[in-house]
Amino acid sequence: MKQLNVPEEQKIDIDFEDEKLPSSVRTFRPLVFKAGEAIHVLLGPDTTEGVYATADTVATALAAWDRELQELVKAEGVESEVRTYVLDTLNASPKKVW
Image 1 (cartoon, rainbow, N blue to C red):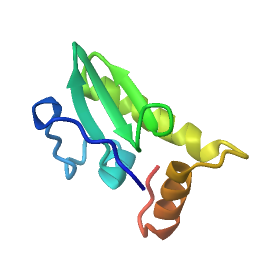
Image 2 (cartoon, helix red, strand yellow; image 1 turned 180 degrees about the vertical axis):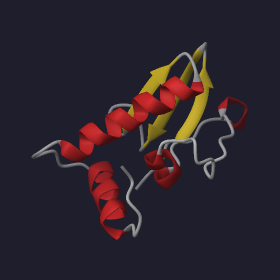
Image 3 (cartoon, rainbow, N blue to C red; image 1 turned 90 degrees about the vertical axis):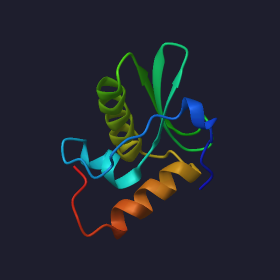
Image 4 (cartoon, helix red, strand yellow; image 1 turned 45 degrees about the vertical axis):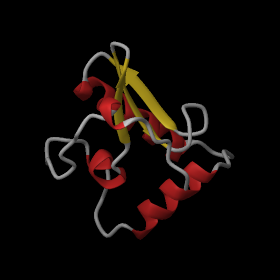
């Protein structure tokens, strides 16, 4: 799956081992970056094809992204490279993501 990349100075370092993070964030390790005043979280090639959320804080953006990911997983009849990647990863994971 193709992942959007942004300039290093926009990226926000996240400790993906932090157990306070949603388990989906620890599993998928989405791109977290700042553009303007907003925090953006993205898994995928762009904001329309990927799992995407934005908010004012990192914690709020990660929580919103987690909800968007859950909605994508539940979505019946949605065909996308990102959804296939997410479902394949969840099916291969020995640990529960939610």
